[in-house]
Length: 279
Length: 338
Image 1 (cartoon, rainbow over the protein chains, first blue to last red):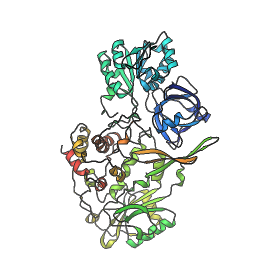
Image 2: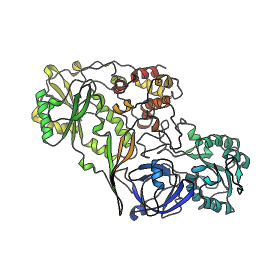
Image 3: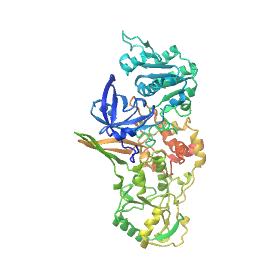
Image 4: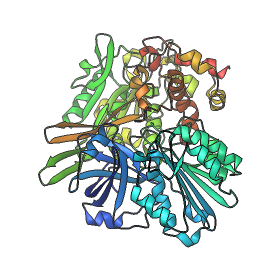
């Protein structure tokens, strides 16, 4: 829906709160104004500005998949002022949402190929949108592999969904925790994401890699992908620089001449090589 | 439209201001307070200062206020109510006494606020603003408008440009439709052009560098050692951004009193360490040299590339305001010759 004042949010009702991990929650949201909800569309990879009135706005991706209609979801870690205020809210409370902003994962271009998802920690939410989107279109793709790691077992998010992916016969799921983060019951891998990627060594032929995680994980994952034969234009990631407006005005996310909010947040590794590493 | 030349006497200009006030328009003009000159509302021309090269603050606040309401909200028992700022309440405004460089500064703001999404708050304020500029009869060592394709008598961006000519009268160049409208409504104050040679009354602003040489150099300078060298004394205070007529970077904050509040956008600066700091603690521009580089390259590399406009008008305010005397034009010469 077109708004004249481009900074006006939608009012959203919190329908469901899920505790994902310590300090990490997911909100399922519905539009307070049904008409706005009917007109709202988005694609996987896009983000929004989520706000608590009185505290301000915070930027994160839409964590739900557009193939699941009728609601949107966000997953956030309680860390700053706004996310702490968000964490204090519950079902029936209201928040603001502006979006969808930014570019998208070009899923249609990936039809017929295998997919390798690599995520670390709280970076699974942006990936979850594209994972479910692709799983909902399962017959369009060949192999689907998910490699997800967190610092410790308790920090793995979407535990129920990880279980669901584990039980899907046509999904290869590899879970790992950093050394020292395992529990006696832990049956997954132990090791950093790049190490486990090297060990699992998925075939790069006709495969798209989608990587999202903290900068340090990305830094060490890219060389492993290169070693496995993934060309730079076959590797996608999503960046999350600090933003205020989300729409190319506030000047905060700029990286060289690129606006992360408008030209991104989704970039191929090839594109990233063309811009300064200010992200 | 063709520029029409008229003459307005100093006393008539005062009467024009009174008429504009009587019509309910806000007239912003340079006002001197001790050592600073700010654009502030005036009722009579006596309040206006003419003792300035460039005003301390640029006139950008006329269209992009330092702190501007986006919306109002109320957290009530029945949920949250909010409404966007109505722009119909923005007053008709005349900015009197801005310099030709200042008028050009709005090109950068307009480009930023409209290149993709159209920013109604900025556009509606700008649409209600008429600019009566005054040419520069003198300049100082910080001025470098002529290095960025401006000039002390350039009409671009103004609606009416006044140039003080013989006897203290003003040559009035009617530049735009807005200017024409104002000149028609106050036609009794304007007289026939005396034919004065405008150029004779303009400052001689030396050209310090060639911007067409500088921009391509800037575009290849990301790894240059100049950023560290130039920024060694930068204290990251952000004064340069706050006086800059083209800096548009902003923050958005909520302010509350009890259950009511407002969301405002306020000027910000890429020179602050917090500007890009992620909640995680990661900072893409961790050091001051990276922030200084961003400031210069945003204006001389990224904006020319993306928005087809150089984000600097050569007013020199950043350098006048800098507490540690970083001189932008010297640094630009340094970069152009690197």
